[in-house]
Length: 393
Ligand code: FDA
Image (cartoon, rainbow, N blue to C red; front, side, top):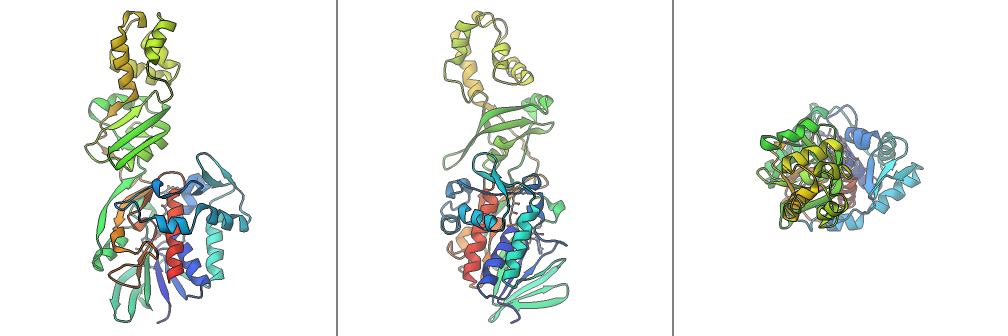
């Protein structure tokens, strides 16, 4: 055996896992398809990498088993990663909602990961075309660029298929199936939603944004997000919608509260305070003008508020608190920031990320069915799962 572990994929999870394993004295080889490692890190957070979230906890992740992420997240926290960032003297700031970004550039995070790998004498090979991956009594044999590498441990860290033009592939799922592991159907997440039918009218408002509360899903699988929504020429985007998209399933309605900060009875109160004003005019005090006019037009209430019954105003207000959109799809993997679904967590130990059926096989990061919210949670999962695995190599 020329290595103790082979890691497929030199992204966030793979590099961090390699560093942890290497620093524990394991001989680690990373095989990366692209010409450079950490490409998604470099473009993340608009080039500043939202590298973690101070509030990251299991409730911020979607998975068929919501308990799976608990152990790894508890054993390697946002604070732990922040300590590492600070040890490297990387300046950072909190943007909003616990989201931590580099002051300078995402390149600093990649440089830090590479320095950590170097400390662990990790061997990194880029531009690798993975051929066959086989397992026998002794361990794993990976054929890449015509060479065969052997190790008793193999880590799948090849991420998900979101943004294929950056080289993202579904190889993780092919390998999982090859080794008899179940895959929860992958779907685009943190992705803009597209509108058709009656909702198409809203596409004319492309560029308009408003603070809303987006609500989607049923029962356990419910997401409610109070952030900005952005209308686009294809449909809906902005943080509130991207967050909700991870919970949205085809055929479901998306409910938008356009008045998230107004107490019930607001419109009837407006009628007393400004009887001459129209619905569009009072909505304009809270929402961008074009959106206010479109909503008022769709509600079909014209004339001064004093000419409208309290019943009609109350009904209108209810609709504004839960405006139903019926997205006809998403903008797909090409625009998805992450992939939801992935290799089923039921296959792994949540302590070590090792496959129960096949000791020595591990999977970490986005390849696994654990998907974080927008805001640094996905990197925190990459670090935490990479750390749990690196400790077990
Ligand atoms: P990742 O995708 O990082 O790495 C997988 C690696 O495997 C890649 O280097 C890939 O080239 C390689 N690979 C693929 N197929 C292979 C093959 N066949 N052979 C060998 N190697 C192969 N998250 C967050 O928390 N904060 C943020 O600011 C952002 N911002 C952001 C912006 C954009 C535009 C995107 C697309 C995504 C984000 N994310 C994010 C999400 C975050 O980038 C993502 O969740 C992590 O990078 C996942 O880490 P992994 O290591 O699992 O996969």
